[in-house]
Structure formats: structure tokens, C-alpha cells
Image 1: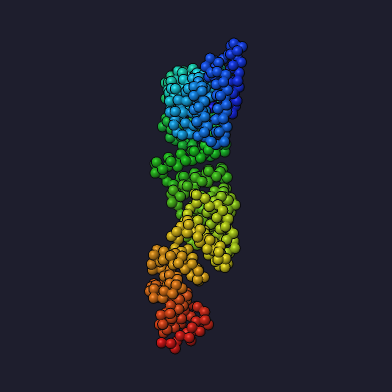
Image 2: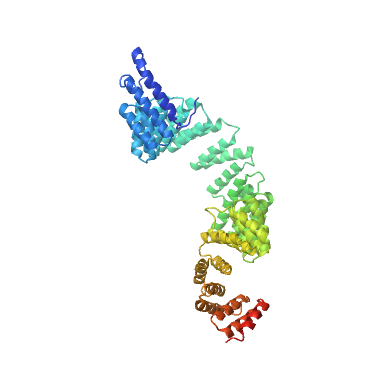
Length: 593
């Protein structure tokens, strides 16, 4: 038996060499008048000199292709066809070029020509057949594969494709014929028998389908799966009594077999025996040997049934509790518990308890961890957020979000070094799928920490990164602008950023103060006064930072309104600003008019 890929890889260099050898030996065969197999290049059609020329140009086409000179290779192939219009290998090679240019009709034409010129070449035959399949021409593909099988009767892979093609075309008699051919090559098997049964099913021949499946079950008396298949087939074809007899027989042999229990549940449901169906479901759900997938399937079915009849949710809650007593470490059941509690809008503490239990069983469950973090977010519980997010970095190292929450929580817990370490590690995990808002905030916090550490270049680089991801991040726009103004550098950029922040929040006293101060640094004092007055107007009594009043004093000094300036300096002292420095200013200006 021989098994090959459906489409062989074609090695162009080998073809070129074979073609050259063919050309070199044609004349010799002609002189000896020896019998030769008819190929694309023959002594009847090509002279010795032309065969040499052909071989040279074809090999050069291969060389040009390998060098990446595709246009030159294509031209050489066309020249080869001028010398020998019956060269199958040239048509085959040229078809690849047409395919790359999306000229599918020309590619198919060349493949068909190659296959016609060398019908014994399996590579050509398979290539054209695959092209037919790609274009949805299954009839033509079938013809091509049948021709291929005619010359390669040991190719079981070809027959397998034919089976699928006949199935696609709903030609079930020929599909059965192809199955028989495959059986002659590979021998009988349960898989082929099932394939044959399915063919009978699709053609509506229930008699032969049943006989085939029953024969399979009878030939495997110790494999109850085939008996169950037969029972399920009988149920599907409205023969419940016969199916029930088979199920009962299997139950006697294997009473804990989850498959037959599931079949019995379906039988009871189909015959309106709801009480027995409910009992069988309980047996499946609470069976210690029930496979996890089956248990979960029936637990979901129980929830669905309860929803349809608008049953009490406590029934499902109790059922989930009973199931967890049997399989306390089953993560799928724990996930269903969380999902059901959320669907029923149970109290947040109850849902969080279920999430915490799930996380203990499945610490790499990123969704459960994030939900717990979000639940604590509203309370600013940074310590608990850190306790949740830090393990997330270990269990889900590719998830940037856990680095962000770790960095954010440590930042608010006054651990700037720990925060910066987490945020820098998180920045390495940013990708195209990352939440841009979160990425921007990550860089914004990094900028603040760097600035606190007097690492200005790093801070400004982080702010720039933040604004790439979110150009309207007003906190960064304001802070970045203010820090630049304090440095007295790049004031134009600072003004542009501060103006954006003010436009976004025109009544924000802090943003107005920043903009006024930048105008002051640019010696535009009259404009600065307009915005510092707006900042004072919108500050109210809630602003405890004396910087605003100190800025107001400096601006009013430049406008020669010294009494007002002194008043602002005095308010700045009351707000906690440096009294010593401000008293010097007060003493300097209080006597001026």
C-alpha cells in the first residue's frame, strides 16, 4: 500500500535537469531507432540542436527564478514554448506565474495542457485537479482524479478524495463504489463500514443502512459503543421500542456507562417520561464516573430546562452545590457556577466568593481575576487589587492588563519603584490587541514616576508614548505642559498641549492655571491674567494648593497691580505654600503702588 500527499511538491531544478537529459538523449535514441515512450520532447518533433537550445533556456529560466528575477524567467519560459510548444514542464512552471498574478483562467489552461501532454505525470494531474476544486468545478476535479487513479491504482489518498467529491456532488452510488475501491486497497475496517452506512443514509436507503450498522454491532459484541450507535440510529428513525431494548441490554452490562445513561435520558424525554428523565439526569450529574464533559453538558441542560419553565433559581444553586460535592476540583463546574450567579444577578459578595473559589482551582483564569479586580476598583481597594493582580503577572505573563493594575495599585500604595518595575514589564507586552486607553494610562503613570525621580528625559518619553496611544489624554497633556513650563523649554509645545486640556475641560481650575502660567512664561501677561482669573473663579474653596494663588500674584506683579499680587501671596501662604519665600515677595511689593 502506498500513501502520498494529495498534492506533491514539484522541484523545478529536478524538472530542468530531467528536461536537459531528455534533450541530450533524443538524438541518440533516434539514431539507434530504439523504441521510446512518447513524451513532450521527441525525436519526431525536435531536432538535436533544438533540444539543446530548449534545455539551455529552460535551465536558465529556473536559474532566473531562483535568483528572484521572475519577469526574466517568465520571458524565458515563453521562449522555451516557441522552441517546443509541447513541453509539459514549461506549461506547468508557467502556470505558477499566472497563479501568482491572479490570472486563474490562464493558470488553469496551462495546467490542463501540462496534464494532457503528460497524462502519466501524477504531479500535473493532481495540480489540475486541485485547481478544479479551488474553483468549485467538482465534476472536472472528479474526472481528473479518476484519470489519476486509472494509472495509480495503489493511491488510497486519491480514492479518499474521490469519495469526498462524490459526496459533494451527492452521487452516492459512485461514492459507494469508491468506498469499495478503498476497501480493496486498504482492507476492511470499521471506519469504512461507517462510511458505507452514512452513504446509504444520505441516499435514503434505510434498509441497507440498518443492515450495515447492525452487522457492525454484531461483529463487535464486546464493544458496546456500536450497540449504542445502533440504538441511537433506531431512535432517530422512530423505532423507540427496539432502541429501548438495546439500551436496557447495555445498561445491564455497564450500568455506570455515561453514554447509555445519556441515551436513556433522551429516550425518556422523547417518550414524555419526564420523571424518569429527571431521575436519569440526576444520576448522570451526581455519578462519580461521569466524564466531565458529559456532566457539564447535562448541567447546562438542567439550567436551560429550569429557565424554560421559569423555575426557582435555588433549585439550580442547590444542584450545582451537590455536583461540586462530587467533583470539588472540576473547573468547568466552577465556571458554570460563576456564570449562573452572574446571570441571576446575585449579590456581588456571592459572585465574588464564587470567583475566588474558581481562581483557587484555576489560578490562570484571567477573566475571573479581572472580574474580581474590577469589583474592587470602585472601592479604591488598592491593597486587594495588588494582591489579585500580582499573581496574574505570573500566571498570565502575556497579559499587559495585570502589569498595569499591579503598577497602578503600587503607585497609589506609595511604592513607586515597584510600580515602575511592573509598568515597564507591562510595556513589553503591549501589542495590536491591547486596550489603547489602558496603554496610554500605563505610560502616563510611568511619566509621573519618572518625573518624581527627576528623570526628565524618561518622563517626557513616557508622556510622548501616552499621547501616541491617546492624543486627548487630558491629564498627561496638562502635566506634560506644566513640567515643560517649569523647565522653561519647548514652551510652544507646552502651550499647544495645555490649550487642548483647557478646551476639553474649560472649567478645570488646574488646567486653566497651567495655561495661564505658560502664557506668563511666554511674557504674554495680559492673556495670562484672563486665564488665571478664570482659574480662580472656578477653583472655589476646595482647592488647597497655594500654587494657583502664587501664580496669580506673579502675573499681577508683571501687570503692576501690586496690592492684588500681595493679596494673592497672602492667600497662597494660607493654602500651605512656602511662607518664607512668599513673605520676601510681600515685603518687596506691598509698598509699591
